[in-house]
Amino acid sequence: MFEYGQLRSFRFMSFHNFWLMREFEVHFQSGAKGLEIRVADPRRKSVHVGDVIVFNNRFHRRVIAIRRHSSFEEMLESEDSSRIVPGRSVEQILLGLRKIYGKKKEGFGVLVFELETVA
Image (cartoon, rainbow, N blue to C red; front, side, top):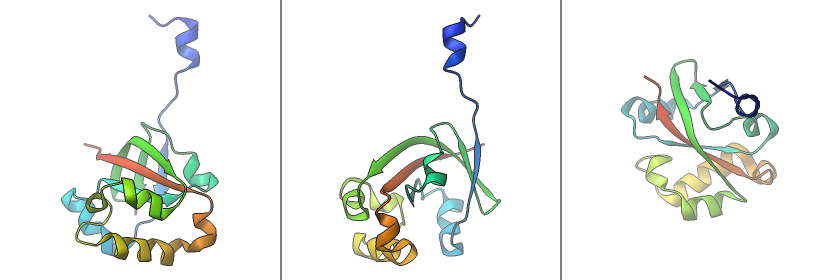
C-alpha cells in the first residue's frame, strides 16, 4: 500500500516522437546505437528517465539515463562514440552534429539519452 508521500513522487511514463535520419536506422535495427544525442531545447528537456522515445514511428526505446553536457566536444570526450554512430570517428560525429544543429543550437547544451530496446 502506498502512503500519500509516496504517491506525490509518482510520475507516469511519457512517450516522445523523435525524427531520425534514415542512414541511422540500421544502427537501431542492429541494437548498436545505444546513445542518442540532441540539443537541450525545451522539447528535449521534457524527456525523463523511464520515458519512451519513438523514432520514425518504428523504433521504441526506453530512456535509462540522461546526461547533460555544455557542448558536442565535451560530450564526445566523455561518451562512447561507438554507441552514438557506430563506425564513425569522433571527428566525423562532431562534424555531423554541427551540420545538423549548428553552433547556435549547440548553445542550448547537449543531452545524451542512454536507451534500451522496449520489448
